[in-house]
Image 1 (cartoon, rainbow, N blue to C red):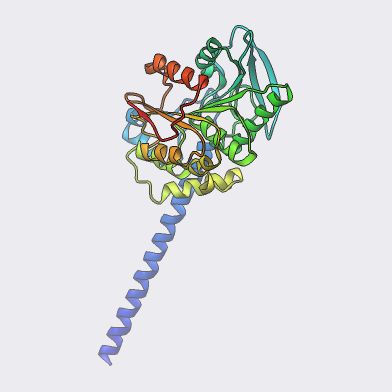
Image 2: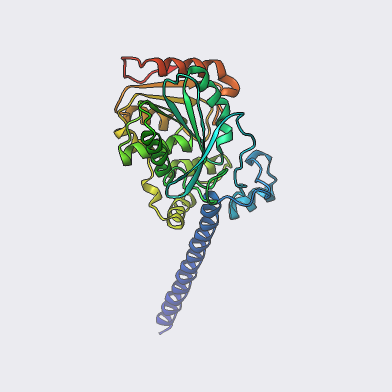
Length: 334
């Protein structure tokens, strides 16, 4: 009888332990999802411009890092900080209303459409537009939704922005432009790749800078820069980001988009990039279906390459637009 009572007590204790463990795991899972909801919303929705931007991870105190890890990063809505001397401002109706600057040169060889990266705006592209002008090309600079003069405060890291790429491309087609070139940096590069994949655009050539391999990988990279574990919170952030913005974020994969890109492509990358890995770049280059050329800037990170490599950038872009190498194998210029 004593042994039976003792066994019953042990079973009861074990059941309570299992119940408490299950409750603790459930609580942790709920809290992780709450954190992911905060992060994903702030990652895809800019705050009021007057809101202070969260500092870079290396400049945060321990308390600030904890707060950032729990509630996400504040990113003020990007606004244009300068304007070109002579330009035509226009609004285009896409899935959102977007603002563009169109600038002409005499006897143009064609038009380059420029698309900015995450947290950027079209005024950040003026330096590159100037170089394209000197090469003899008209330019069309674009504010994606949520930035500059365009509608809203939302960004989808290139997903719905792809339709805005298509809108700009179709606008130039309607205007009679036959030589259309696409340039995009980071998110802008991804939006170009998705637009070509989804809408079968036929630009003459494209120039893309540091596109990420997938939405999941780019989210993981941001956690790694803060020395924070990626599993499982990165996956939850991608899931909730997609839910909040109305798309399946795990399917947002430029490595797959590359398989349908048959036009000549120049891909530019900084070897010190902490947000996009060399492995992602190599996979994209491998999957590109047309002529391709990869240029590596050894001392550049995820940044404007004109800061450190203006001469090299200009030379590479000039040669690429002038002609395309017959060799379609991956090329790495150190």
